[in-house]
Image 1 (spheres, rainbow, N blue to C red):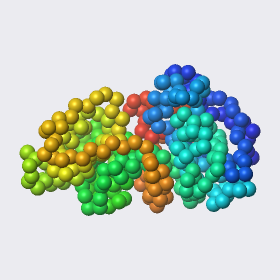
Image 2: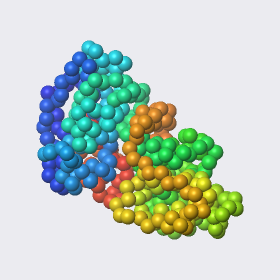
Image 3: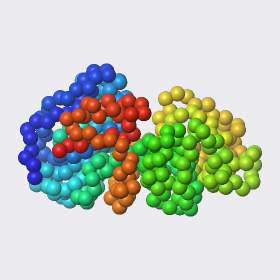
Image 4: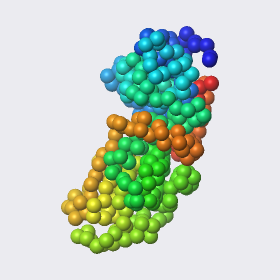
Length: 345
């Protein structure tokens, strides 16, 4: 086991639009605590938003970043049960006693170590097998976000689904749909390399919405919905998931939805979206909004452990910890990368 350092570098938002590496003390665990050495931490789109805003209220001053960690337990207090030095773990950033890790709390995971106070396996931490690559283990948090969107959709085995947006959350949702037995999953995007990744993880079909009529293609892929009060021919698609956050997605769903279809929106829409409720009335479309992961943070871990090779293509770039600031810049540059993960030696 590596020697535990006394200080570490942590990525902090230091001012609006500014990031820095700040040297801080490595926290010391008490009797009920564990110390986790961070081995990998993914970068989320919200990290760029926090940087732009200059932090996360109500926290004042420097704000630590990083909320997608995986690591190894390097110290455990005498009262800790179910966790031992050497355990590989994924972390629930929302269960930290000192605030959400990397999202306004006192700690961020773009650092060498995390202190987990009152540590309980299955609450703040989940032990994973040693063979899971660290960069794949670091997908646990965003994949939990994707799983919640699928749970909110009510998708069931044997149904047909379409996911708009082939970024990390959309791909995670598509994988979750397939792993729960959804019969046919389509992914829609406008970037060829994203659609190629979707096919690599095992979706049934992809649609390039910049060149193809999405509704027409869904009818080809999913067949025609049975006749109902809904006017016009509609695809027999049961579930729609919006992981793109673009207004045309909502318009496409409105034009496509059959009677009884469900739409789950996990994407952040930065502008108001027009929705013709009168026109949708006969569809009885169910719309569910999805945020975070109330129960899914470790629900998704088993899927990652059992199918880590299918999740691995979601990671587009890995950069070492000494290039953490460059990694954040890369992740914030539109079109430059998909999922960037920072790895620690």
